[in-house]
Length: 108
Image 1 (cartoon, rainbow, N blue to C red):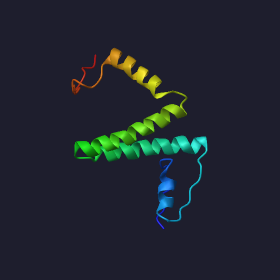
Image 2: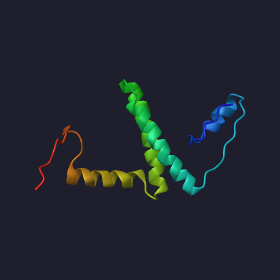
Image 3: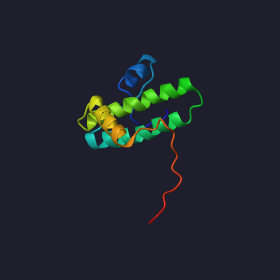
Image 4: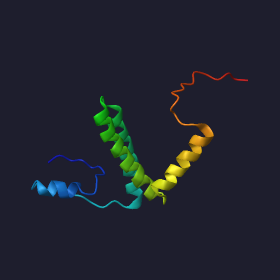
C-alpha cells in the first residue's frame, strides 16, 4: 500500500472510496494544517513550473489558486481581501506585465 502523508483535497477520500480501495486519513490540527498547506503550495507551484503547454499550465494554476484560497481563509481573509492588497501593491509598484528584468543597481 503506497504511503502519501500529504494534504489532499476534501473529496479525495470519497474518490478513493468509490474505487473500493482501503485508505487511512486523519484531520490535521491548525499547526499541522498550515505547515502542510505551505508544503502543498510548493508542490503545486513545482507542478506548474514543469508544465509545457497552456492546458496543463492552467490546470496547475487552478491548483495553486485553490491553495491561495485556503491560505487566505486560514489567515482570516477572503480572497477578495487578498485581491485588494494585490491591487494596492500593483498600483504602488506595478505588476509584471512589462517583463522588466533588473540586472543591477549601482551602490553609492
